[in-house]
Each structure stands twice: as structure tokens, then as C-alpha cells.
Length: 182
Image (cartoon, rainbow, N blue to C red; front, side, top):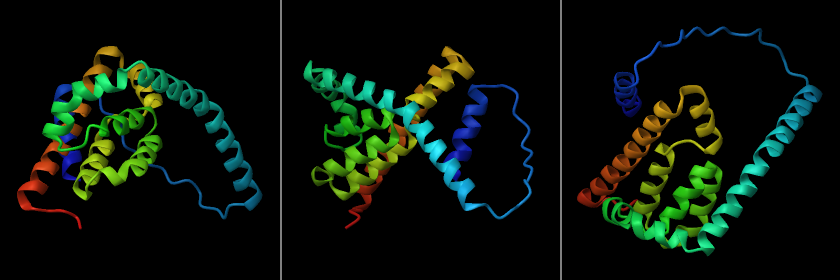
């Protein structure tokens, strides 16, 4: 809660603009019909799969070739001072962060596959950074469309720096206090 207030206040100063009205109307409350709920759920699930599947496939293919061409190793080496030094995480956390940027659920799945190589504190720090990182590719595309390239790039930079700083603070604090989550 407090971090949202701080980030909101800083973002409001960095990105001035007109704030929207916050008016919430309550719709009439009715008992839903099971057939209608099932039909809408099926329709929205199908629409989501049809929309997301090409992005998943393209991202997986790009990540596959990126890895095969040595890009992942190069990225892990470049990110080593931040990931290992500042955040106290294994270099494999870069893979988790990449998949988080592709789709949040993919990052969580990757982390669950790798969790044996992480201590409990490292798992908490990784999940914290994943939570604060920018939303998935779809949301980033909408951000660029709605706010323009300059503001979107600034927001994404700010969010990424905030995620790393929050993760570093948690990692340092846990080491300093001897917290192990055991």
C-alpha cells in the first residue's frame, strides 16, 4: 500500500497530466444464469487463447533462437552485476525475468521449474521483482499506443528501476537481519 502511494506520487510529478474522474457506478445485482456464465466464460477463454497463442508462440520461438545463438548467455553475463551482485540471485533468474516480461504466468512457471536452485530468500526476492516488473508484452504495447513512445519508455524505465531497487532492498534487508524464510 505505502509503496503504491510513493510510486504514484513520484509518477504524478514525473508525468504530469489530467487525472481521470473516479466515479464508480454499481450495476443492478442479479443472480447469474449458469448457461449464460458458461457461454461467456467459454467465449472469453477462446478469445484469450486465440489472441495470446500467437504471442506465446512467437515469444517462445524468439527466446529459443536467442538462447541457441548465445544471446541468453550474453544477457546473463551482462546482467550478472545486477542480478547476482545487487539482487543476490543466481544468473538463471534472468530467464525468469525474460519470461515474466513475455507473460507473467510464464515467469511464474519458469521459477517453479528452477526453484531447487534458489534459496527461500532468493525465491522471495525474485517474486518481488517479478511483481514490480512491467506488465506483459500486450500491456506494454497498449502503453506505447495510449501514452506515446517517450512517456511509455520513461514509465517502463522507472518501473524497471523501481523493481530492481525494491528487490535489492529486500535482499539486503533479509541478509542484514538474517531472515531465511525457513
